[in-house]
Length: 426
Image 1 (tube, rainbow, N blue to C red):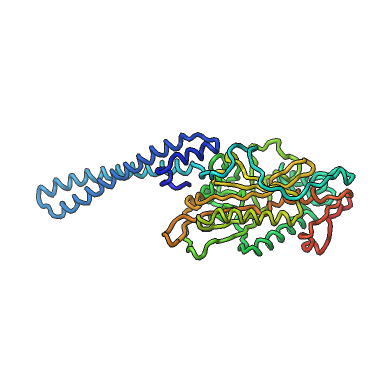
Image 2 (cartoon, rainbow, N blue to C red; image 1 turned 135 degrees about the vertical axis):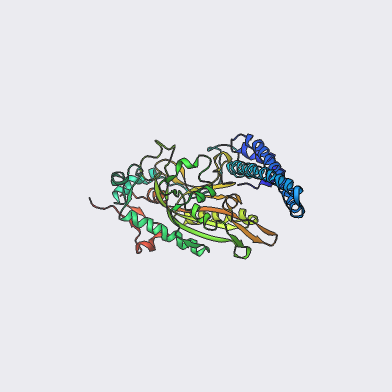
């Protein structure tokens, strides 16, 4: 959540941020009114509580009829105190609910607009001209079937639509990507973590994945009141929930590998072929807990790491600055890396990195003990390798006319030095 003091001192900034997201600024006025009610009710309770304490001292000194009168007044005052406390508590709950519904404040540098209003920051590599090479590129599913790497038919039989099996060379390719990603992240100073894929509601809510319609996209196990995560960001953020971290232990850098589950609500009819948009996939995620003053620098570092990793896979890609109306609840700024998909003749998202400032830390009660006192930390996240999409890009961009797929040099050590994935018989 945002700092409530900012709401009081600069409500126009909050209004501008909501407008940038394409949302109504009306909640700001509602919040200001709720804050006033909360503070007034707290003051009223504290005044009555002080009177109650003062009367208690009088009762201790009084005798006889005077004492009986004071006891009667004390009883009446106690009821007033109880009612005032209940009113203050209710006002506080209402204020907190409204405050948690507000998205993070959008940075001024973020381009304004909706999904198509991003700004291209960089382009790397050149898409292959398959026509000049004399053949029409196959899509990843056709290649996956030729290689014995992807089995959608049995995935649907076992689990339903948008599920799949990675088999043979496909399973090997994911494991190679996993090991390459983990080796890179460890080299960069990240601590590897394999986090739980089931989390409590407080973890989902604390990271902002139950708000702004995001709850429609998550799987909830009602009998256990647990959620299947859509990203290991949730567990890596909640890892330090309700903790105070010493400043000299920051930044804390984690790289998590976990399955991710998404309903893909609202995606009916989109990317139905193959493994681009599925209900389950594995992902390597970078996550940093740091001082708020360092969050923007870490955001850039995570983008550098993503750039390095994608480059090592020899893929043509671009980096975009995501527009304000396309940001999630927690993000103040987000960069996406999009690789070229030959059979669609366009760039598609494969990684992203978000600066969530102190928004998640406030919701999860993660604080740091700094020289200027105890205050919320900041969190920054970045995808290093979303397996299904990276597999798609490797297959399509490195395919050869005979149906084989050239392996990027960075992955060859994980295949015993092999240079290519080759079609299988039958």
